[in-house]
Image 1 (spheres, rainbow, N blue to C red):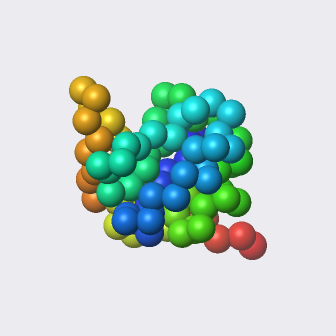
Image 2: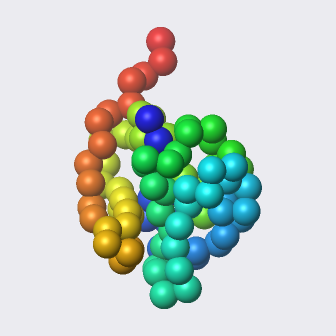
Length: 92
């Protein structure tokens, strides 16, 4: 599991989540339009969620079936793509 930074982060790029992350797995540069979480480094602690002013960080397992912007880094360059995640299971 990992956490995902979604579309509301675009153009906000607040670094509060970076400062709190114990694994330093949230990345982005001044040129990036949003931050991204490296799924290989994320330990699923959720510490990044409360400091996010855009409410853009979610655990991947809880995302509803919707289009969300997912960012990642390839060859030292930040990239993004639109993805669809499975429906959240309703609590009964």
